Image (cartoon, rainbow, N blue to C red):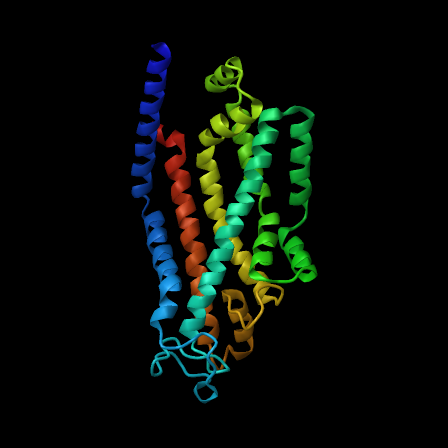
Length: 295
């Protein structure tokens, strides 16, 4: 009966905490603006290409360098006469999907290493965290560029490369959180019941560390989109004719004076996506910070 009562109390507290976190998040105006912007951007990239009259690869030399709002070219055309709006939305699909899947993969890797290091401790925990420190010692952009130069730069490979160079921060956050949780009552109770270490790590501790993981994951999406744009801008990422926001900027740099919209359009899209995810991450951080309950 006592166990049932304890479970009911814990469940009630959890629901109360979630409702308070939701209320705090809904009061964060920049986070709500971020959700609105990223929703509009994602819907436009998902369905926009079907609504536009032009294919993103359709070349029309007669219409090259058309400025925005020329005929049906709402955002103008590029040096080959391809519709910039169609290319922007098609590029957005690729850039957003690369960012999303890189976040999922890097969060998975970082969470697994972090929870094992934090729970096991000892020589294994120290070895894993020194491994993390070794990766952090190298500037991640150089690791990304080196791997992208050596491997075939397809969207899938770029996603994997970004994930393999951006999991370390998640790992450190999870390790610190798990170390603070591993001596809590529910963990000790699990050990007394004879639950395996794997069960305690991934079924008991990890769900209680999900708040910082969500915040880190949201910020990782923004960083992944920026990284993909950066390496594509340098020519090591997504390769033409497949569009991405980064390689659109690469193609626009020699026309900054004669056709500035070629750089402005993808630049605004990158800024909008990265800023939106950062706003959402800030809102989640404030909402999930239990210290705010005391204010």
